Image (tube, rainbow, N blue to C red):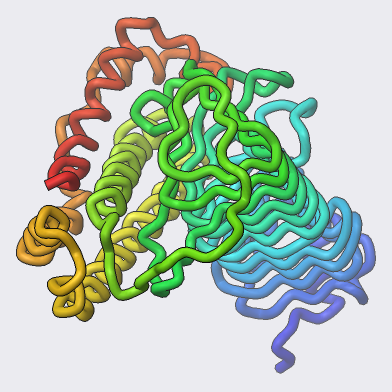
Length: 425
């Protein structure tokens, strides 16, 4: 028997209501359960489906603009995959009304668009790599690349952008001037000379950001973001800036690109306190988001598909948590390896913190690994208001009363704080 369904079998699928526009140019491996292709789904010529987890829901359209390969991927109702050219999806979930232009995604989740007027989710040349999560209305332009990056509702990336190891929040809606955005040509630099990536950047935060009433952030085009970077809500930057450290609310001009020569010893970690502090803060916010999905989002689900989609979003958050632990482990190993050299060249104040971090790392790692432990339960008022509210996810969040939103923020901050503490020694 062939590894692929025959034309006759595909015809039976078509009789069940799946539109196959050209069966002889549609390839479906036998490891795909045909019952997971729902009536009303549309398969254009050049569609290839494979993998036991592959599923296409009613109203989804696969390949109107070019060949599409789905491998162990799920496409939700009303989504369009391959709107502008060929697309390859591997182990990815595509939420309702998502529009993917031309590119590739692997181990990624798109929660979808909430109305037909929202911009396409991705343009031409997208590359959405493992650990990427696009929440409602989040989108990117042409030739963008993300990895281990979480975009909260409405966050918009321009074109020719590379973002890895970033959490980006902020904004109050999807009209122009209300959502957080990044100008074209911007790169987040997350890899150091030493070879570590304890450099994740936090633009906004989770504990406030999930309530969708915080000031937006704006990163000017053609900028260099040097991780780890912390940015307050309401932070803006000029185009062409070199940004590092902390961005306060208001306009940040950054610095000019450096020239000349400066002594640099890659075996030393004089800024270890800053690195650890930022990564623990990032980790704490991720833990808060993990439990937001677990206790709040899942209960807001309107149907089984949406619940599964939210669980996949939670899984992406979990992947990012595990990545942060791994990068802190690598950083600690590098510090340990070079400790004898550091003892010769670093001042005592920095050595004192470094020794304390190394001594306490095993205990700290065990604490970080406990992130999934059940924390305090979400406030009852928060759950009641959200479950009873009508409308889209973002609409329901923004209808929360100020008192309830404040209680929810305190709940999340209580989850995040224990993981953030201790980074400054």
